[in-house]
Length: 421
Image 1 (spheres, rainbow, N blue to C red):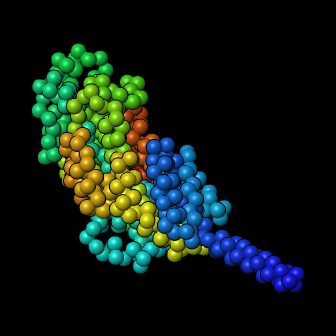
Image 2: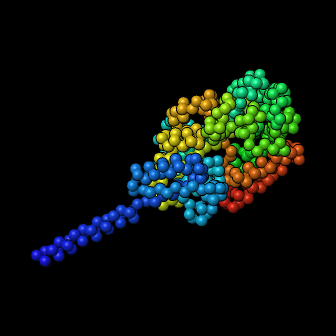
Image 3: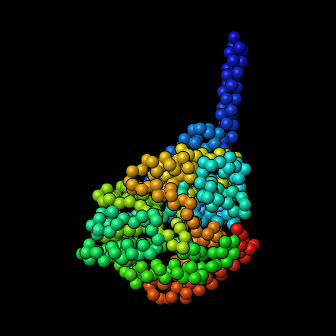
């Protein structure tokens, strides 16, 4: 009996060891992924809940969220250079800076059903193409329209702007607002805060193949001259000396009739603008209709040890369900057409929220250049010189043109190739 008891005890212990080993093996077989994204106090809880839900649905995978505060792109670039890159990462307008460096996995084959369908805004998907490969998939669209305070227009007895307006009509309305008794009796009143997007004048920073600067074109000169005239000639927009640090606050107080408003401003205005009547309208047409646009997308690191599982996560994060959840919080427009309609139908203020959907065919992103951040700083510097009267548009843009070409040449030498599309 004692012998049988010892045999039974040994058998049970063996089962426990085998069982324990089995659990340990299961745990070691689990694939760990990291998803990096810009930290945002409002959006972070939604993303974390989504990752928790994904982990429950895929017990063989565990995703750790990595919210990055501060300069997201610079920190991400350092991580990639240091071989500590996340498996999956959020990516916006600096997509080209990373794509040029081979940072992303081509997901064209895995996403082909979605790409071929009519479900999505294909124009936005194309923003994540590079060298005829698909290196990411967008879930949200951002753009800038004109927000206008209807209470101010009513008090000034000026008709509301319409989507059909052009630059001349915009200028007339703004001047009319600036000359009203309301404006004269309101200290610090301005008809408009912002600028006209260069694409309206068919102006561009780089050539189509991104090989060189074209910023000193007549079209870009016209852009800077027009925007400078809004401040210095017509006095309908504030200068930097006006001390307006928060245009949203001026708009809410009735000191601003029209302002550039982005998709991400929608939730803020819905929260803060409960005491005013406001709406949105498409920006005025110039030589063409063009509207600044950007996007939020998901990319997979090209050297991730787990490409299949990373693509599974990408598909989940860009699914219609997640699009609606995140875009309802951030204000972005979902890239899935049906979900975008659902997003717009769920918003009652502003009344013409559908104008954001109407804007999509006219969106133009910043160039997917290898050195976008540095190039953009040169553009901003040229604009600042003109606004302050320190240079003519031609002088400022000739300098910017030279500097941008220098940046492109230097980056191409570092990467060992000519400019790519």
